[in-house]
Image 1 (spheres, protein in one colour):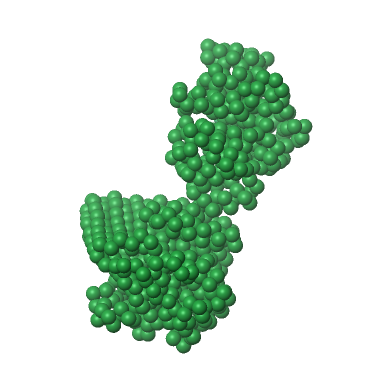
Image 2 (cartoon, chains in turn brown, purple):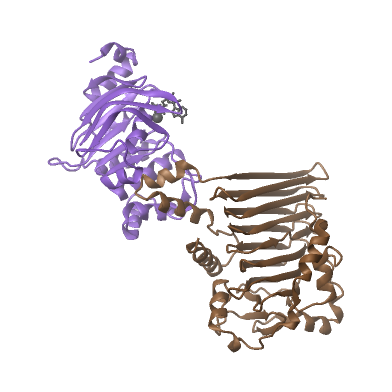
Length: 395
Length: 240
Ligand SMILES: Nc1ncnc2c1ncn2[C@@H]1O[C@H](COP(=O)(O)OP(=O)(O)OP(=O)(O)O)[C@@H](O)[C@H]1O
Ligand SMILES: [Mg+2]
């Protein structure tokens, strides 16, 4: 097993949980119109658009309650997970199948007392290129929000989901636990883009499992640029089918005070499956752990891992932990990792073109954070880049 | 326009330039020849003001001002431009953005790229995967956008094919106002091993650098012919 097993800190996790009250004790917002201007601004900065007509499907959960759940796309089902559980008899084929409820204190807590979450399913053969959006929003102080999400891309379908996770500005504390289980069936494609925009006192514990069947494609784009107390995320994708493909891209900025333990694991069980984990991290004084763990168990697979880290402060820490694990000989697995400051040569190159040292530095950082992601619809790419630029302005 | 007085420069603790004297007037183009490792690139990098090139002694006077301790971008603002022998790759920065920085105008950046058949590179990341010749072209395009009064060219033609040599030649002509015959204001210093560039751009004077010193000065074509016939041995003896 990998160096990382999140439940090593069992008792500390229990302690952390005790500090928060269940989201169900906090107020719920039953309608978007009940949100304040402050909320809307924050959501917009997280890539969530609530103006009518902008997205074809929206799920918005505030604390524990569903604020909006609407989907106009033919062939796509979007429900609060609590309703989906009723409708589909407990979702027995999917529920807790990719994440174990006993994994750690956070999964146990979510199993014990759920606050909701979303269920999205693309019917067989349905190809929906316009992104649907989901948003998990914490709006009250000292709340533990516990959600469990399921996405199913049925055979031959295509689905793009953009998720914004945020907290209301100035919350003194909060905890978000998100269990997510994604199923990409034969020949299906799921592009999942997540923007984290938490507050400086927020703890975040996503627990994600993904299963990709034959010829399926899963692409994850993860962006976290703002202050946060602590994030610990390590999605695991299992490629069960032949030629399945998975790509994890992440862009992470750790400001002073942030501790972000991030990464992904891919387990290749299907022959000729491919994976790529690419992370770009910046420390402005915070800590980033950039993990990657590739496991090769089937022949003719190709797996690549790339961590690039930029240290923009003397105080921060970037810790890249790339791991390759081959169980058979017939695999092609590689990794690259580079951490350091911006090369002087690059700054001077731009200075020779007339930029000041500060302008040159920020041009290079902006380039480093450039979200150029294959397979992303152009509008979404532009939107994501705008979010990155917006965040970066404040640095 | 540019006056270098007894310039001594260290790179990584190693004495590379050992008392360079050189004067280049307004509107003049000079060539710099010399063996590999003799210090030619070091001289250009020092003129541009890069950190790793420590001036131990001497002065650089540009447009009547002592720029020896000026920052790189101040020198760029004053009108010095450099085409790099080996520029770094800028991940995620598009050539379009860089040209816009140079030109201070996005439209002019694009139209320049168009006029030299480089439009396909606008959305490529700067120097990432560029071939040797493409790098040279991109460097010159940046300089054209910048339009410096004094252009430093470090082997602008090395690795360029015959056809593109024409394009490169045209670009350099433009940079150095070789299309104007009177009242040229732009000056340049060109490092060349092949001398090809002399077929496109007439130079006023040539210099040979050997082991951190300028050993020979004179008519660039004659010097180049001499080097071709006799190698650098003659220049060592020459001591003008
Ligand atoms: N960063 C550096 N670290 C160590 N030595 C250096 C560095 N830069 C230059 N030098 C040394 O200084 C000397 C001059 O190098 P320079 O690049 O100026 O030569 P050049 O005349 O441009 O050669 P070429 O014709 O091969 O381009 C060489 O011996 C080189 O190895
Ligand atoms: Mg050189």
